Image 1 (cartoon, one colour):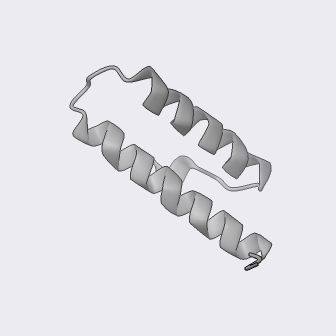
Image 2 (cartoon, helix red, strand yellow):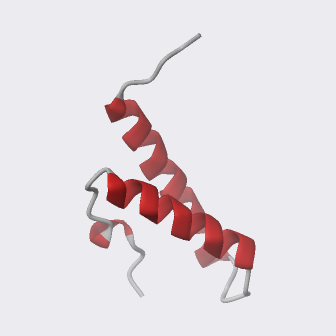
Length: 60
């Protein structure tokens, strides 16, 4: 079994969050409640690690 350290978990979660944001942007404003929920829960996980998400958001 491969174990990840905290750094790897955070890095993978940031990558996942980044991918979710890209998917949301590609949806061109289409509502997707499942995607929104995934983004919300991933934000909570990252914030629990003390990650500032301000710089991870797409610019409008």
